[in-house]
Length: 384
Image (cartoon, rainbow, N blue to C red; front, side, top):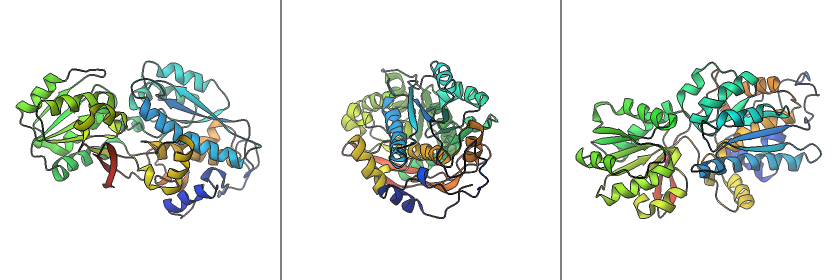
């Protein structure tokens, strides 16, 4: 078991000196029973995989996450040049229909010892049973449906808070921050959107002025816009992803709606502003993700490597990859031992202090708010 009392700022400072978590090599177990090699000696010829949308409508969120994980692997390999870890990127387009096939490709590579992903809840529902059956430890940096941790999967872990944690915050933002008296809820047809909106409704109760559902890929939202205007709603929550949100808000504002617009982390991608333009201004975002730009050393390293600021889920994916890298640095060479290592992990990351409950949920679940100002997501404050 890894134990440290450093703050996340100290952990982040380690990036600047090249001392990443994955290269530290300190555990309570010095028995050497870590999967076939001596404790403290890095294992070689192993891989970490990433699964998520690298192309397709939701690629913006996938690229931000995969780049966070890639940065962690690159930093590890700089410190372990004679025994590097290979990073395998698998593009599922976050499509539940494609997910099983992609999962099989990952599972069938015996050198893959850990998975950062899957990215979204829908593909997780389709692929996670396969990963669990194969005994491949997984840490998702972004899938938030609460039911994922309720399946009895031994190899599932989540780096961020789920919808049950974020839902009540959505209600608070609508009523206390946006001062909405008559909030209207709109959900897409994804497991993510429906789950999060249902959690928000529990918190809002009788205050909800109305509800509607849209479909993924929809481009004409006038029926929903009409329902919102007819309900005289002064606040709208959209549970879904940015490809639909960016068109929806343009049509909503174009119809004269001037109330609050609140969205979850699935909308927190720069493409939202690129398409929505001025209609995006003032949008409030809730996200169980930390603003990477506020973690100075991570922000500097990420920006230098990718020539852009850290995106949504980048810090969480960086932390997830580092958990596996730390295990590899300790000499773990098989999936079962790695899963035991992840289960007992207890150390600071850059997004939070990392430790997992028995069901794989993160024990620490910070939730942040952001607002679109001048075409950018600006961090407001930590809500939980």
